[in-house]
View 1 (spheres, protein in one colour):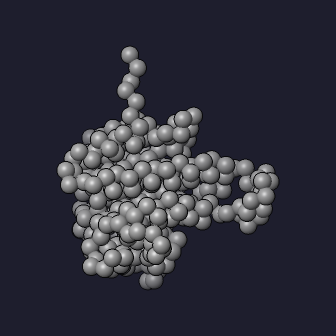
View 2 (cartoon, helix red, strand yellow):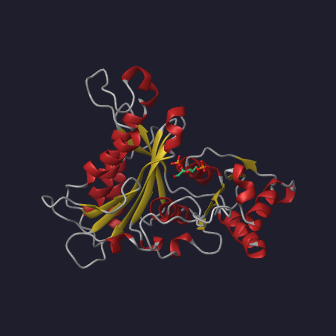
Length: 337
Ligand code: FDP
């Protein structure tokens, strides 16, 4: 018997039934994101051909101007989402301020914030990269979106997801009805449901952290990582270290296999006491996914989903993954700071 094939379009449409007040606007927004993902995936798959086809800033063999991949991913996301009347504004890791919907296009009732190419330092080495997105409902009074629409805590997200451009391209998303993963079949150009209702194991076997920064972490984080490395059969230690350096890829592996990703605050540099990763388009959307899969995300002392954002590009320490592992980190931080 052949398995039932469910495309992402069909799945999104079926999910719509859980929201009786839905107009379809949101459903189409997710379609547009999936389409942008396919276009970016195609471009990422050619990244290794830079030497042959021309590098960023040059004119390639087809006579086209070659764009840097992060610029391409950013422009693709904007282009696919600015004209359909579903959004009232966008924001991106690549832009300092919010991105208005051009006056000539209608405005909708959602805002979209995204990191178009997460892990971009890895792209030239042919290592997995990703895209992260988060959708909020418009809360501001005017017709066009405003900053306050973006500065909403994570628990208010309408949807969140990521795309990983790895050995296959996958899109994983949640609308608050579980977490579902789709693998892109490049032969037909469709995302097909491959990982329905993903659940993260309550405790993991992997820890992911840039250990080169060990001496810059707080005492509590250092003690916790030492604890993970200490042998104890009863608690399944030592954990295995896995660090790709692309948040999406590290998170994705731990989501499926169980484990914790950490990017703590750097205690050495007073200019970045809040860690490296961004609250609104890295930590909060992945926190929504982690929670929907049965996991957790914390900044070490409180749930990421509860943090009231103060600015668009705000940074935050991040501990995310299997529930018991995140609980344990907090315990160490409570004890030793
Ligand atoms: P990158 O700077 O390459 O875009 O988003 C920031 C990020 O990658 C994450 O994807 C990744 O987890 C982290 O930074 C890697 O930072 P370090 O190089 O400091 O470990």
